[in-house]
Structure formats: structure tokens, C-alpha cells
Image (cartoon, rainbow, N blue to C red; front, top):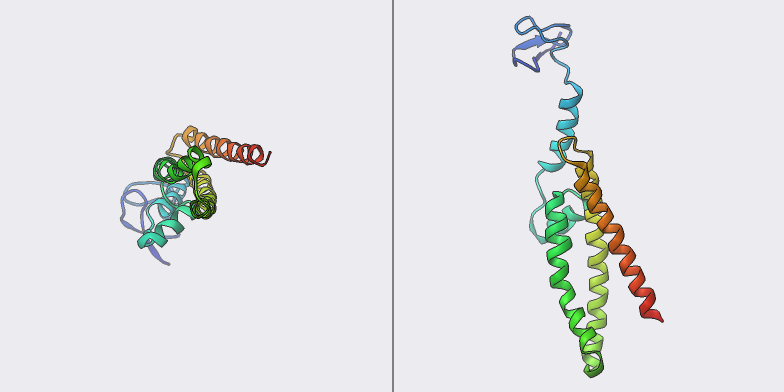
Length: 163
């Protein structure tokens, strides 16, 4: 017979007890469904994040960053910063040298990798956000709609650029 703390009063109770002798809660050593789902979400969001820039990149890719950080920092703010050189290249396309054109081609490949990374991370992070019963699911679904629209826009621009 093992002893575990009661889920209500934390008094040591037999795992075979059907009722806590102190507080009277039924099945005192079994977690209820709300506690189980809450503990799963806490494991996702309260985990120790990896260290350094490589750890941050990996945490975003896995979707283990909070949706706010994934969407607004990585998806919005970094996108503005990383898109500026491409905007400059498009505005000055007629007067750019071959060296600059080569640089912008390599930079475009970097940006394409960033684009995939950021959208996969936001998609996965929104999935964790939606599965957390304490969150308003609307924001998770809104982030997913934004990812779909972003990908459709990018594919459309690529197709138009080929013509």
C-alpha cells in the first residue's frame, strides 16, 4: 500500500482509499481531468528553454515559444527587419551592380529559409495555444489564418514574379 498526497488537502493518503479521511474528496490520489490537461500545458510552456541563439531558433521551430513571442516578435517584427533589404533591392533594381545582385540573390535564399522557419513555428505554437483550455482559442486560430494568408501571398508573388 503506497501513500500519496491528497489532491485537495495534501495529507498522505493510501492510493487505495476511495475517500480522503481528512477532507472527504473522492479518489484523493488521482488527478482530475482539469489537473491533467493543465499539467500537460505547463510542461509545454514552463519547460526550460534551450540556451543561446541556436536554442531559440530550435524552440521556435518546435513551437515551444509562447504564441505572442512567436507571432509578434518572430513573425512580425523580425519580418519587417529582414524584408528591408529585399524592399531596397526591388526599389533600385535598375541601377544595381552584378555583385549587389548576387548578394541579394543569396539574401533572398536566406529570407526564404526564414519564411519557412517563422511560419512553421507560428503554426506549431498556435496549436499548443489552441490546446490550452485556459486560452481564448480565437487567437490561435487567427494566427493560423495569418500563416495561411502569408503563404498564399508568397506563392502568389512568386508566380507573378515568374511571368
